[in-house]
Length: 293
Image: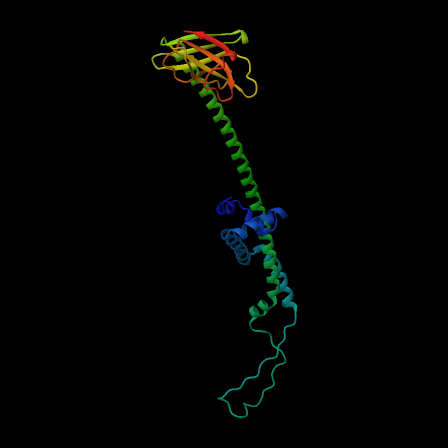
């Protein structure tokens, strides 16, 4: 999976929130070690969460705690010594130290309160961060589950599309085959030569369709015994000089019409059983069918 696709899945947010399984945590750690882009994105998510938590603490929750703290602060006796001052414009008598009041109230209540509320603010930021982390984790978990569901749907659609494509190709193949056979059956230029079974296999039968003008040869097997292991049927054309000419190997024994090698001259056709791959000359004692033109 590419780094960009991995980042967009939402799993990095769950990793930062710490809600993934140990195996998933190890996977993300491995991806971060492998890809700088993923490692930088994890750092960015962590920084974003901290900044957001510091600047968006829940208002209602912080006001409740802050008001309670400030009320308790106001009830405490606040006393500090008042500093002594001197003036250059007064005479020596006034320069004598004046008795200072024992205590005074702080003039800057806001400064006093800020000093008192610092610990509370720290804990509030931590609490807000945890809340935001939890909400972010839940949201990212939901998005991650949606992404996983979308991926599963995509795989199912791809499988369905593949099945439909295979069915279409099969139908097209059968249609093309039917048109080809019809073109052969209905073409008067094709001469039909029936190959009948010989004593070695009297029930065997095949049909040759030969177009002398184009030299095209098609074979349709009606009945032939299954070839034993290491053997294969071979078609032969017997020319005008009684010389056998290789017309091709039989790929299958089904009832389909199969194209064979082109033959320019022939007075007969025959099929023999040869070693797999064929022979240069036919094995006469292994001839199964033959037919004259």
